[in-house]
Image 1: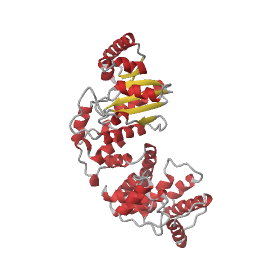
Image 2 (image 1 turned 90 degrees about the horizontal axis):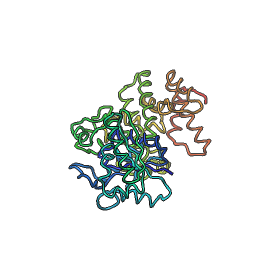
Image 3 (image 1 turned 30 degrees about the horizontal axis):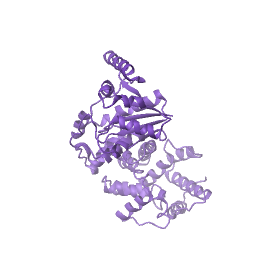
Image 4 (image 1 turned 120 degrees about the vertical axis):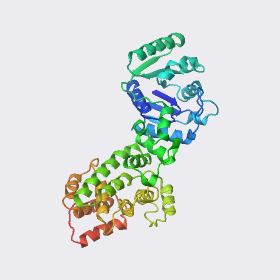
Length: 402
C-alpha cells in the first residue's frame, strides 16, 4: 500500500493544494492520500484570525471530498489531536507505526522541499517516508530542485520524486486571506471551501447570507453537501430554468430553488428532526422515521430562514420530494427537474424529458406514478401526499401510462 501524507496549515486550503493532491495521486499511484492539518506549525505562528482547528479540519475535509475519491482521499486530525508543535517527524513515525507495511510518501510544495534539510530531525522523517515535491516548470526552479534532490539523496539516503505541475495555481495563504477580507479571492478556492468560509464568517468575511449573489449562493449550498451531489444540483438548476422559460414561471426563483433544493440532503435523521422542531414543521408518522422524506422540508426551512428566499421558493423545495395536490407551476417545475435532470439515468427518463416540454402536468403525473410503482415494487410505504398528487391530477383529467 502506498500512502501520501500531505500536511500544512490549510489556512485556507485552496486550488493549488487540490491540483497538487490530484497530481500526486496519479503520479505515485497512491492507495490513500491523507490531508493532515497542522495544529501548531513549528516554523511559523498562526496569524491572528486563524479559524479554530475544527474549521480548518472541516475545510480540509471539503478539499479531500472535492477529489471524488472517497476510498482514497481523507482528512486526518492526528496533528490536531496531539499536543505541542506539529513536527513532521512525529507524524510520519506515528503513521508508520499504524501502517508498518505501507510505503509512505511525504508530499511537499516548493518552499517546504527546498528547506526540508533544516526541519527538526530530517533524518527521522526520511527514515520512514519518501518525498514527493511539486514544482512548476521554470528552468531556474528546476535547477534548484535538482540540487536539493541530490542533497537529500546524498546526506540522508532519501528517495525523492519530483512532480512538475504546469500552470500550478500558487497563492500565498497570507495574500488569499487578505483578498477574502476584502470580499475577493473566490477564484482561488474550491466552491465548497469558499461556501464554508462564507457560512461561518471566516477570514473577515461578512457575507449577508440573505442577499447572496448566485455564485456565493451556489458555494454555500455546495458546502452543505457532498461533492458527489453537486453535479445533480447543477443539473436540477439548469433544467429548472429551462422548464421555467418554457412554462412562463419566474426563472430566477426556479434557479435559486434548484441551487438550494438538496442543501440538507446529508443531515442525519436526528438533525433533520431537530430542524423540523426548530422551524415548526409538523411531521406525520412516516416522516418521523423516513430520513429521505425530510430533506425537502428542512431544505425549504434553511432556504427561507438562512438565505432569505421567498415563499414561492420555500414551497417549491418543500414539495419537491413527495409532491402534493394542486401544485403551483414552480412547484411542478422543481419536482420534474429533480426527476429528469441530465445526470439521471433510468428506464423511461427520456420519455419524461420529452413530456416535460409538451405537457407539464402529464410529466408530473408520470413522475408521481413512477415513484408510486417503485415504492410498490420495493414494498415501501407511499407517502399520502404523493397519492394525493396523483389523485388530484387524475381528477382534473390528466392521463398518462407508465
